[in-house]
Length: 92
Length: 135
Image (tube, rainbow over all chains, first blue to last red):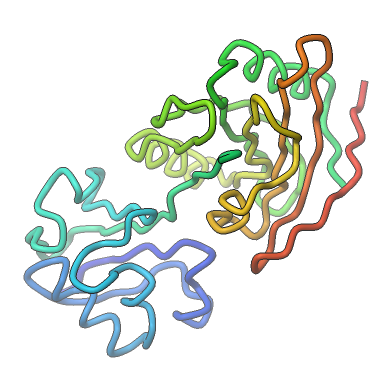
């Protein structure tokens, strides 16, 4: 079983430069835990305590998982999960 | 150093003026590895705020996917400050997540004059760089 996970530039230090990695799991939470075994520290950049960090966007195929079931979103073989840091800022 | 065409420079300024007093934001895409901004992509500010901006997440996904398909990358990420100087704030620095991009800041605080400055923001460090507008 393989789920493709696309890694943004800023997180490739955790994956030895790889822009795409593979993992397994029945939910996004399990998938990220699986990736963390291989790429230690990656999960912590995406999850704060028990929820997804506010300024990181995670997509299952082409939908933001915030509009699905967050960390409990089911994932399956052949899915693609994409991580993109939010682009944000401002004067104040 | 940021080299940018007059056309792209003026498109960014016009976008910032049009959205004032809300912050405007967007991307200039260019061929991967070229450091050449070529394509103007104004983005929706999902915050619609005079002091904060954020790319809409679905729009960001589509734009980033398109750039990837076209072998492009975000060469410039721009946004405007509407009442303060065109310098990265602490928020701008902490959220800067594209280490290869030029961060362009525009200020529309003055009606008659638009400030346009560019920076690299890498690992929390800001370095201003000169801007060359190619006519």
